[in-house]
Image (tube, rainbow, N blue to C red; front, side, top):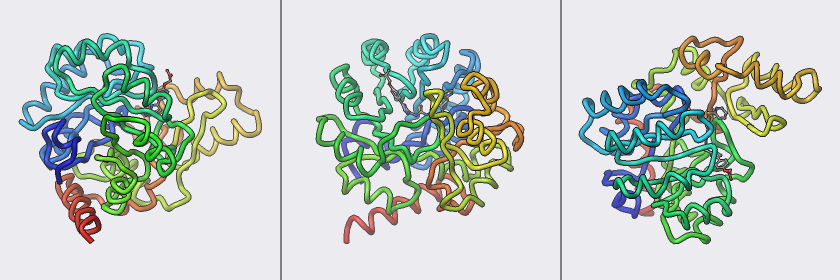
Length: 308
Ligand code: TUI
Protein backbone atom coordinates (compact mmCIF):
# COMPACT_ATOMS: atom_id res chain seq x y z
CA UNK A 1 0.00 0.00 0.00
CA UNK A 2 1.54 3.27 -1.15
CA UNK A 3 0.65 6.62 0.44
CA UNK A 4 2.53 9.87 0.91
CA UNK A 5 3.61 8.45 4.29
CA UNK A 6 5.20 5.28 2.86
CA UNK A 7 6.90 7.46 0.21
CA UNK A 8 8.11 9.98 2.80
CA UNK A 9 9.46 7.38 5.22
CA UNK A 10 10.56 4.71 2.76
CA UNK A 11 8.61 1.92 4.42
CA UNK A 12 6.38 -0.85 3.08
CA UNK A 13 3.31 -0.18 5.23
CA UNK A 14 1.89 3.12 6.56
CA UNK A 15 2.09 1.92 10.18
CA UNK A 16 4.11 3.80 12.79
CA UNK A 17 4.61 2.30 16.23
CA UNK A 18 3.73 4.65 19.09
CA UNK A 19 6.70 6.26 20.87
CA UNK A 20 5.59 4.97 24.26
CA UNK A 21 7.77 6.31 27.08
CA UNK A 22 9.72 3.54 28.90
CA UNK A 23 8.09 0.92 26.62
CA UNK A 24 9.42 1.67 23.15
CA UNK A 25 13.00 0.42 23.23
CA UNK A 26 15.20 -0.87 20.41
CA UNK A 27 13.97 -4.50 20.30
CA UNK A 28 10.38 -3.41 19.69
CA UNK A 29 11.35 -0.61 17.31
CA UNK A 30 13.58 -2.89 15.20
CA UNK A 31 10.86 -5.57 15.07
CA UNK A 32 8.25 -3.10 13.79
CA UNK A 33 10.65 -1.68 11.20
CA UNK A 34 11.64 -5.18 10.08
CA UNK A 35 7.91 -5.95 9.72
CA UNK A 36 7.62 -3.12 7.19
CA UNK A 37 6.35 -0.34 9.46
CA UNK A 38 8.29 2.37 11.25
CA UNK A 39 9.51 1.44 14.72
CA UNK A 40 10.16 4.18 17.25
CA UNK A 41 12.46 4.37 20.25
CA UNK A 42 11.06 6.57 23.00
CA UNK A 43 13.40 9.27 24.27
CA UNK A 44 11.05 9.82 27.22
CA UNK A 45 13.13 11.43 29.93
CA UNK A 46 16.01 9.00 29.39
CA UNK A 47 19.66 10.02 29.82
CA UNK A 48 21.40 10.84 26.55
CA UNK A 49 23.80 7.87 26.85
CA UNK A 50 20.89 5.46 27.16
CA UNK A 51 19.18 6.80 24.05
CA UNK A 52 22.44 6.77 22.04
CA UNK A 53 22.97 3.13 23.00
CA UNK A 54 19.37 2.26 22.04
CA UNK A 55 19.72 3.93 18.62
CA UNK A 56 22.97 2.07 17.92
CA UNK A 57 21.50 -1.28 19.04
CA UNK A 58 18.49 -0.68 16.80
CA UNK A 59 20.79 -0.06 13.83
CA UNK A 60 22.39 -3.45 14.52
CA UNK A 61 18.98 -5.17 14.45
CA UNK A 62 17.54 -3.52 11.33
CA UNK A 63 18.69 -1.88 8.14
CA UNK A 64 15.20 -0.41 7.67
CA UNK A 65 14.30 3.15 8.66
CA UNK A 66 13.25 3.74 12.25
CA UNK A 67 12.63 6.80 14.40
CA UNK A 68 12.90 8.38 17.83
CA UNK A 69 10.11 10.06 19.79
CA UNK A 70 11.13 13.17 21.69
CA UNK A 71 8.94 13.86 24.73
CA UNK A 72 9.14 17.64 24.90
CA UNK A 73 8.40 17.86 28.62
CA UNK A 74 11.64 16.01 29.29
CA UNK A 75 14.22 18.27 31.00
CA UNK A 76 16.87 17.08 28.52
CA UNK A 77 14.76 17.35 25.35
CA UNK A 78 17.36 19.74 23.85
CA UNK A 79 20.16 17.19 24.23
CA UNK A 80 18.03 14.32 22.91
CA UNK A 81 16.98 16.45 19.93
CA UNK A 82 20.64 17.07 19.05
CA UNK A 83 21.47 13.38 19.54
CA UNK A 84 18.97 12.46 16.80
CA UNK A 85 20.98 14.67 14.43
CA UNK A 86 24.34 13.30 15.57
CA UNK A 87 23.19 9.69 15.18
CA UNK A 88 21.52 10.24 11.78
CA UNK A 89 18.06 9.11 12.88
CA UNK A 90 15.66 8.88 9.90
CA UNK A 91 12.45 10.05 11.57
CA UNK A 92 11.62 12.10 14.66
CA UNK A 93 8.16 12.27 16.20
CA UNK A 94 7.43 14.57 19.13
CA UNK A 95 4.88 14.62 21.93
CA UNK A 96 3.65 16.63 24.90
CA UNK A 97 4.60 20.05 23.53
CA UNK A 98 5.44 22.27 20.59
CA UNK A 99 8.67 21.23 18.79
CA UNK A 100 8.85 24.30 16.48
CA UNK A 101 12.27 25.44 17.77
CA UNK A 102 13.88 22.11 16.84
CA UNK A 103 12.38 21.70 13.37
CA UNK A 104 14.85 23.80 11.29
CA UNK A 105 17.89 21.89 12.60
CA UNK A 106 16.20 18.52 12.13
CA UNK A 107 15.19 19.39 8.57
CA UNK A 108 18.70 20.66 7.83
CA UNK A 109 19.98 17.23 8.91
CA UNK A 110 17.55 15.46 6.55
CA UNK A 111 15.37 14.08 9.35
CA UNK A 112 11.67 13.57 8.62
CA UNK A 113 9.76 15.47 11.31
CA UNK A 114 6.33 14.30 12.49
CA UNK A 115 4.87 16.10 15.53
CA UNK A 116 2.04 14.45 17.44
CA UNK A 117 -0.75 17.00 17.91
CA UNK A 118 -4.10 17.02 19.73
CA UNK A 119 -5.78 19.95 17.89
CA UNK A 120 -6.22 21.62 14.50
CA UNK A 121 -4.58 24.86 15.74
CA UNK A 122 -1.38 23.07 16.70
CA UNK A 123 -1.44 21.04 13.47
CA UNK A 124 -1.51 24.26 11.43
CA UNK A 125 1.38 25.69 13.47
CA UNK A 126 3.40 22.53 12.81
CA UNK A 127 2.77 22.70 9.07
CA UNK A 128 3.89 26.35 9.03
CA UNK A 129 6.98 25.40 11.07
CA UNK A 130 8.02 22.89 8.37
CA UNK A 131 6.77 19.53 9.65
CA UNK A 132 6.68 16.75 7.01
CA UNK A 133 3.50 15.19 8.39
CA UNK A 134 1.54 15.18 11.65
CA UNK A 135 0.08 12.49 13.87
CA UNK A 136 -3.43 13.62 14.83
CA UNK A 137 -3.88 11.93 18.18
CA UNK A 138 -7.35 11.36 19.59
CA UNK A 139 -8.22 11.10 23.26
CA UNK A 140 -8.62 7.32 22.83
CA UNK A 141 -4.81 7.04 22.92
CA UNK A 142 -2.83 5.80 25.86
CA UNK A 143 -0.62 8.10 27.89
CA UNK A 144 -0.73 11.89 27.84
CA UNK A 145 -3.79 12.91 25.79
CA UNK A 146 -5.82 15.80 24.42
CA UNK A 147 -9.61 16.12 24.54
CA UNK A 148 -10.74 15.50 20.93
CA UNK A 149 -11.74 12.09 19.65
CA UNK A 150 -9.93 10.49 16.72
CA UNK A 151 -13.15 10.39 14.67
CA UNK A 152 -13.70 14.15 15.07
CA UNK A 153 -10.08 15.37 15.08
CA UNK A 154 -8.63 13.53 12.08
CA UNK A 155 -10.95 14.79 9.28
CA UNK A 156 -10.66 18.36 10.60
CA UNK A 157 -6.86 18.15 10.60
CA UNK A 158 -6.92 16.58 7.12
CA UNK A 159 -9.09 19.49 5.86
CA UNK A 160 -6.81 22.09 7.46
CA UNK A 161 -3.44 20.82 6.17
CA UNK A 162 -1.64 20.09 2.90
CA UNK A 163 0.90 17.71 4.48
CA UNK A 164 -0.12 14.09 5.13
CA UNK A 165 -1.90 13.13 8.33
CA UNK A 166 -1.40 10.00 10.42
CA UNK A 167 -4.18 8.82 12.77
CA UNK A 168 -3.59 7.79 16.39
CA UNK A 169 -5.93 6.70 19.12
CA UNK A 170 -8.15 3.64 18.95
CA UNK A 171 -6.49 1.77 16.09
CA UNK A 172 -5.54 -1.86 16.66
CA UNK A 173 -6.72 -3.75 13.58
CA UNK A 174 -7.38 -3.44 9.86
CA UNK A 175 -10.80 -1.90 10.43
CA UNK A 176 -9.13 0.98 12.27
CA UNK A 177 -6.66 1.44 9.40
CA UNK A 178 -9.44 1.38 6.78
CA UNK A 179 -11.52 3.84 8.85
CA UNK A 180 -8.48 6.13 9.17
CA UNK A 181 -8.10 6.15 5.38
CA UNK A 182 -11.79 6.96 5.00
CA UNK A 183 -11.20 9.98 7.25
CA UNK A 184 -8.47 11.14 4.87
CA UNK A 185 -5.42 9.96 6.80
CA UNK A 186 -2.49 8.36 4.96
CA UNK A 187 -1.01 6.42 7.85
CA UNK A 188 -1.74 5.14 11.34
CA UNK A 189 0.16 5.18 14.59
CA UNK A 190 -0.41 2.11 16.72
CA UNK A 191 0.70 1.76 20.33
CA UNK A 192 -1.49 -0.50 22.45
CA UNK A 193 -1.54 -3.40 19.94
CA UNK A 194 2.27 -3.53 20.11
CA UNK A 195 2.24 -3.70 23.93
CA UNK A 196 0.98 -7.25 23.42
CA UNK A 197 3.76 -8.25 21.02
CA UNK A 198 6.43 -10.86 21.64
CA UNK A 199 9.20 -8.33 21.07
CA UNK A 200 7.80 -5.75 23.51
CA UNK A 201 10.03 -5.84 26.60
CA UNK A 202 7.50 -4.74 29.24
CA UNK A 203 6.86 -6.79 32.40
CA UNK A 204 4.58 -9.84 31.83
CA UNK A 205 2.08 -8.38 34.30
CA UNK A 206 1.69 -5.34 32.01
CA UNK A 207 0.97 -7.54 28.95
CA UNK A 208 -1.51 -9.58 30.97
CA UNK A 209 -3.37 -6.43 32.05
CA UNK A 210 -3.66 -5.32 28.41
CA UNK A 211 -4.80 -8.72 27.19
CA UNK A 212 -7.37 -9.13 29.95
CA UNK A 213 -8.69 -5.55 29.67
CA UNK A 214 -12.23 -5.20 28.40
CA UNK A 215 -13.86 -2.20 26.72
CA UNK A 216 -14.44 -0.26 29.96
CA UNK A 217 -11.06 -0.97 31.55
CA UNK A 218 -9.12 2.18 30.65
CA UNK A 219 -9.30 5.32 32.77
CA UNK A 220 -8.09 8.91 32.41
CA UNK A 221 -6.47 10.44 35.46
CA UNK A 222 -4.73 13.75 36.07
CA UNK A 223 -7.03 16.18 34.25
CA UNK A 224 -6.73 18.53 37.26
CA UNK A 225 -2.94 18.59 37.05
CA UNK A 226 -3.07 19.63 33.38
CA UNK A 227 -1.53 16.28 32.35
CA UNK A 228 -4.39 13.91 31.65
CA UNK A 229 -3.14 10.38 31.13
CA UNK A 230 -4.95 7.20 30.00
CA UNK A 231 -4.04 3.81 31.39
CA UNK A 232 -5.42 0.46 32.54
CA UNK A 233 -7.76 0.53 35.54
CA UNK A 234 -5.84 -0.88 38.49
CA UNK A 235 -5.94 -0.42 42.25
CA UNK A 236 -3.41 2.41 41.82
CA UNK A 237 -5.16 4.26 38.99
CA UNK A 238 -8.49 3.95 40.83
CA UNK A 239 -6.83 5.51 43.89
CA UNK A 240 -5.59 8.40 41.71
CA UNK A 241 -9.01 8.81 40.07
CA UNK A 242 -10.76 8.82 43.46
CA UNK A 243 -8.22 11.27 44.92
CA UNK A 244 -8.81 13.60 41.99
CA UNK A 245 -12.59 13.29 42.22
CA UNK A 246 -13.10 13.66 45.97
CA UNK A 247 -10.22 16.07 46.60
CA UNK A 248 -8.39 13.69 48.95
CA UNK A 249 -5.25 14.17 46.81
CA UNK A 250 -4.01 17.68 45.98
CA UNK A 251 -2.56 18.10 42.47
CA UNK A 252 0.92 18.22 44.06
CA UNK A 253 0.32 15.00 45.98
CA UNK A 254 -1.03 13.42 42.79
CA UNK A 255 2.12 14.44 40.84
CA UNK A 256 4.34 13.09 43.60
CA UNK A 257 2.53 9.72 43.60
CA UNK A 258 2.86 9.36 39.82
CA UNK A 259 6.53 10.35 39.69
CA UNK A 260 8.45 7.28 38.49
CA UNK A 261 5.23 5.28 38.11
CA UNK A 262 5.80 4.48 34.40
CA UNK A 263 9.08 2.76 35.22
CA UNK A 264 7.44 0.85 38.09
CA UNK A 265 4.80 -0.49 35.67
CA UNK A 266 7.10 -1.32 32.75
CA UNK A 267 10.06 -2.79 34.64
CA UNK A 268 8.58 -4.09 37.90
CA UNK A 269 4.96 -4.84 36.97
CA UNK A 270 4.16 -3.06 40.25
CA UNK A 271 0.36 -3.03 40.57
CA UNK A 272 0.43 -0.89 43.73
CA UNK A 273 2.50 2.03 42.41
CA UNK A 274 2.80 1.62 38.63
CA UNK A 275 1.00 3.46 35.83
CA UNK A 276 0.15 0.91 33.13
CA UNK A 277 -0.55 3.28 30.26
CA UNK A 278 -2.69 1.95 27.40
CA UNK A 279 -5.25 3.15 24.91
CA UNK A 280 -9.02 2.76 25.05
CA UNK A 281 -8.77 0.00 22.42
CA UNK A 282 -7.04 -2.38 24.88
CA UNK A 283 -10.32 -4.28 25.16
CA UNK A 284 -9.80 -5.49 21.58
CA UNK A 285 -6.22 -6.68 22.15
CA UNK A 286 -6.44 -10.27 23.35
CA UNK A 287 -3.37 -12.12 22.15
CA UNK A 288 0.41 -11.79 22.22
CA UNK A 289 1.93 -12.20 18.74
CA UNK A 290 5.19 -11.29 16.97
CA UNK A 291 5.21 -7.76 15.49
CA UNK A 292 5.56 -9.22 12.01
CA UNK A 293 2.31 -11.18 12.39
CA UNK A 294 0.53 -8.18 13.91
CA UNK A 295 1.52 -5.87 11.03
CA UNK A 296 0.65 -8.46 8.35
CA UNK A 297 -2.72 -9.26 9.90
CA UNK A 298 -3.65 -5.58 10.22
CA UNK A 299 -2.63 -4.75 6.65
CA UNK A 300 -4.30 -7.79 5.08
CA UNK A 301 -7.57 -6.89 6.79
CA UNK A 302 -7.26 -3.21 5.86
CA UNK A 303 -6.47 -3.95 2.21
CA UNK A 304 -9.46 -6.31 1.92
CA UNK A 305 -11.79 -3.68 3.37
CA UNK A 306 -10.40 -0.87 1.25
CA UNK A 307 -10.67 -2.91 -1.98
CA UNK A 308 -14.32 -3.87 -1.35
O1 TUI B 1 3.04 12.66 24.32
C1 TUI B 1 2.14 11.90 24.18
N1 TUI B 1 1.88 10.90 25.05
C2 TUI B 1 2.61 10.64 26.18
S1 TUI B 1 4.00 11.42 26.68
C3 TUI B 1 4.10 10.50 28.04
S2 TUI B 1 5.35 10.66 29.22
C4 TUI B 1 4.82 11.89 30.23
N2 TUI B 1 5.43 11.97 31.38
C5 TUI B 1 5.10 12.91 32.24
C6 TUI B 1 4.10 13.81 31.98
C7 TUI B 1 3.46 13.74 30.80
C8 TUI B 1 3.82 12.75 29.91
C9 TUI B 1 3.09 9.60 28.05
N3 TUI B 1 2.29 9.69 27.01
N4 TUI B 1 1.29 11.98 23.14
C10 TUI B 1 1.40 13.02 22.17
C11 TUI B 1 0.67 14.20 22.63
N5 TUI B 1 1.14 15.38 22.51
N6 TUI B 1 -0.53 14.20 23.22
C12 TUI B 1 -0.83 15.52 23.45
C13 TUI B 1 0.24 16.25 23.00
C14 TUI B 1 0.46 17.65 22.98
C15 TUI B 1 0.00 18.48 23.99
C16 TUI B 1 0.26 19.85 23.95
C17 TUI B 1 1.19 18.20 21.93
C18 TUI B 1 1.44 19.54 21.89
C19 TUI B 1 0.99 20.37 22.89
O2 TUI B 1 1.29 21.66 22.76
C20 TUI B 1 0.99 22.58 23.73
C21 TUI B 1 1.67 23.84 23.31
O3 TUI B 1 1.05 24.60 22.57
O4 TUI B 1 2.85 23.98 23.64
